[in-house]
Image (tube, rainbow, N blue to C red; front, top):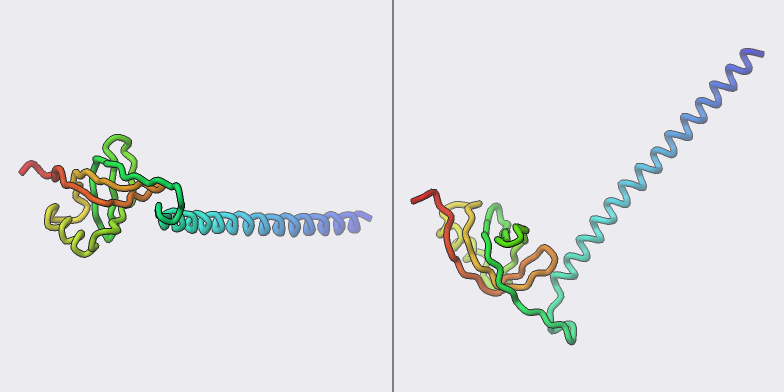
Length: 144
């Protein structure tokens, strides 16, 4: 009798362990797939927002705003840090030749990742600042 009871307990433990592992696997799969889905949706939304033009939507008024802060370029990425809010924005320059812009930055700063104080006039869409024009105000230096 005792042997039968022990076998039943072992069988129940095995089924319980099996059920727990199945539930854990399903939970992990749902978690990873939902995170992946969220990332894809955010990327799609960002791309769609960046491509909105005032001509595309009747009645939409998009006026440029002047931001003062620091422009930093490095490894192919242009970043702007706003002086008032200390928020960082990715920069896009739709009216500029990017190769010439990089040459300008490197010739003025003499290296990448060197902050250059600028006034950027453009349109802020989410975390992306679309620059229409800019003015270099001051180059942060080493006291030279």
